[in-house]
Structures are given as C-alpha cells and as structure tokens.
Length: 244
Image (tube, rainbow, N blue to C red):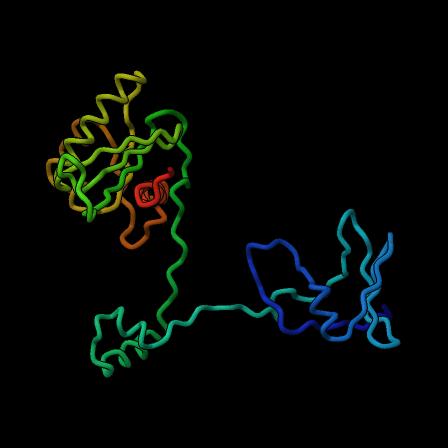
C-alpha cells in the first residue's frame, strides 16, 4: 500500500503452474481479513491494511515484486531407509552407507525427450511397439505374452498374443503386411526399447532389408516410448477389470 513489501512464508514452488496463487483460507487462519468488492480486494490485519488486489476479469491480482522463485520452497519425496534397503536386495548396511556417500555430487539425470519430440506426418511413418508378459493367466491358446504395435499418426492399435517373446519378429511381419496392404503406405520407423526380441540379428537384418529405421530408447527411459508403455498398462487394466 505505502511501498512496504509483504513476505509470504510456507509457500510451495510448482513449475507446472503459471502464476502464483494465494489461499484466502490460509490468510484467515493468520487473522487476516479479506474484504471483496467489485473492483478490488483489501486484506486487513487488525486495523492495518496490508495488501490490496485489483480485480482483473474473474480474479484478483496482487502486485508481486522481486524474484518469485528464490524464496519458494520445493517438496520432495523421501523414502524410508528400510524401503530403499529392500529395493537394493537387502545388501549389507555397510555397503548401503557406502552408496549414500558415493551418491553425493552425482549429477541428476536430465529429463529425456518425450516420445513425441518429432511428430509423424502420416500413417505408418512411425510405429511404437512394446512387449507385455509373461502374464500369470494364459490365453485359451496357451499364450502368456503380447506385443502391441501402435501407429503414431492415427493411434491405431494392433495386439498379437505370443507363447514366447522370440515371436515378435513373426508378429511384426504380419502387422507390416496387413497395414501396408490396407493403406498402400510403407512403414518408415519402428520405435521400441532395447529388449533382445527387437535387437536380435534376424530382426536387425529384416529391418535393414525393408528400409525401416529402428529407433531404440535409451535404457531406463520408458518415457521415450511412452505411447506403447501407456497402451500396455491400459490393456492390462482392461483385462483385470472388465466391464459387465
């Protein structure tokens, strides 16, 4: 009001949210009274007016000064040591402590590019593929694996069941023949993880002979093939919880 700045404490920094939000309910807990009118909102603490927000459309805006990020707090999830110890295969605690000291100073892995860094321009330009299994329940034909092929442009999904993962190449050939005959177009790129079913000699030779470029995701970055990963999760959920 008179040029004096007000510092807000106990705040959270959320990069995905554009702009800053203030909770009137939280201010009320601190005995701050908010008085709204058509043109503005005045915040009072006792007899003093501490802030005034002007109405802009359907919101009331405060004038912020300084670096909005430097005083912001971030939240992080901390796992109990027992949980981490179990995930590491119950290694001796001495080795676990050594790992903690070795982790100091290790740079954080940057976010990997998503699976849509380059958008496909047409049908069959890019095919996403992933393998599910082994599944606990066999199909009537005795299959415990499934492979999905998803067209990036149309989002058309094709699923083949398999008795073993080594059948991926056979199923891809079937998929390629069916889709290319139906569309009159050729598959240009195939995106998958680095699983042996996609990187074997026969698979490599077939892709090379057909002029198909193989895009393999970086290890431990499933988001690079997120479309196929998400589809597999959806298929599993639909199988577990069928609608009546």
